[in-house]
Image (cartoon, rainbow, N blue to C red; front, top):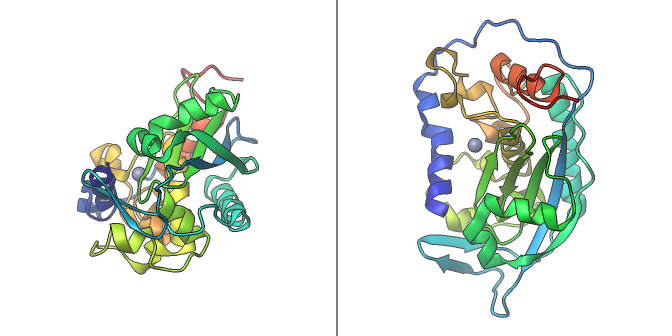
Length: 273
Ligand SMILES: [Zn+2]
């Protein structure tokens, strides 16, 4: 699992998007920002069930994956809320429309750490349903899950179904300002990471990036070859640059349009409202 994540993460830096640094930002005229957003983001802080022998502050191996969770197990929710607030403000500026982020819900999951590690982002649906929250395209669920190490992932919404995403310990701990060494230095040591990837702002960028996958945004190489955003202009590649991007608010026009379409009255194929 971590290798998969690692490969994703590596693509942020060395992905095909980076092979087109000279690709011009598409000179399309953006669609207007809708007056309000039909979708909101629902952040969840998930504390999985712990086995008796679970160790904090120690490397845990599971197959080829390595995990590291720093103490304390329950993170600083005030710091997490502050990061969510900054994410909400940043996204409003980037999209031109406020998108509501609901208050952080702390959840004690019935699933174990091992189950979350096995299922990753796919565990979100069952958790949402257990909490009696609605599984509909009005929402993007963003789960901060303790015990998931460097794992992160996001799935785009579909008509009738929400977007959903998870981030693990690296994101939570950096956002909360935990002292290094954290998951990052152990799991991804030697990686090609700029130091900002481990900062509170860099990992705020990481969870906004995952939430934006929930809104349907791909990485730059998910767009047509002649329309791929330049990596340093978009949070969908250079998430660690958050909150400041070169020559953009962090989303290029084609991406801003896609989010506006996702949240606005323009959607084709959705059920509308
Ligand atoms: Zn991504």
